[in-house]
Picture (cartoon, rainbow, N blue to C red):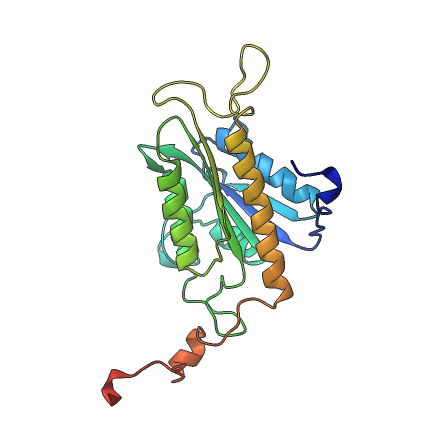
Length: 247
């Protein structure tokens, strides 16, 4: 048992910024189960001083595609350029998704594709644009698939440059098949899933590990640029790569 006096002082992460994108299929103002669990993470971050901007993707006219602005590729409207500004300005990105047919929502796939649209952009070190930022995922549903959805989403974020800290996912699923979802009201006045120690613990660890990692990266000036600058590679720098032609 940890003595109260041994608990470290709560960190102050004032100055960090986070973007939350809820990929529910339910438009506002209707209740979103995914947002209900995202709120746990958001409240912890805001209490630690983090500035959070939240988006429910289905509320915005975000065009599908893999370019930064799809109005340049045949669409009449595209809300992504404005939302992406908040994402680029943030140290932390948290994606929330429900589970449908064992996988992430269509909104989540669209957001991943729109993030991927920036995969060719670089920062002032010549690294891919999302280097130095941290990413995590929250998943809710009524069927198996939390780990599968977390796996695919976290891989996608890591592949485009986000740093994924330990325990970067949290989720809740009810009994397989029709039934109550996270945050639904119970007959006794409580809410479904709020008493799940597993879910609440993982949501808490997710929040703090994202903030810890984002803070460490910011203090360090991001990821060291040696060995990973796309611009330097294109200019001919090979970072001690063993060229087979000279063997």
